[in-house]
Image (cartoon, rainbow, N blue to C red):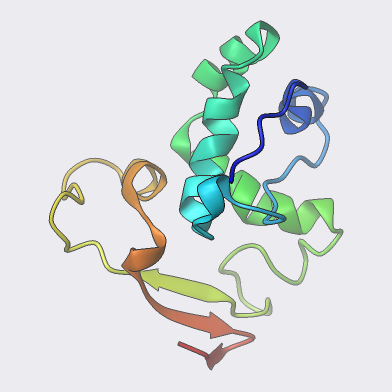
Length: 133
């Protein structure tokens, strides 16, 4: 099950200090193994600590997707090799289906992916340029 942490969000404090904050995958909320839910929980976790509420309101969906991609690579010192779709970087990609019922068809893509994507939306996956799903 989900563990209730009594401590304020570390990634929020690190982000405020301009550190290479990221969202990892050491566990996911409610044991769903849904990384999209894990990303959303990073935002909702900020509301548990009054000190971080302003940060929760200031971060946009694009910011959370950056924390889950390029900022994670930067935290590992690998941003020159992975974390974004850029020439000469490893081609690690996830293609999502967005045509399901209740997946909004309007609005910016980052907001839709952040707010509505789930593990069931994963259509295909490429790791180092090789399709694995």
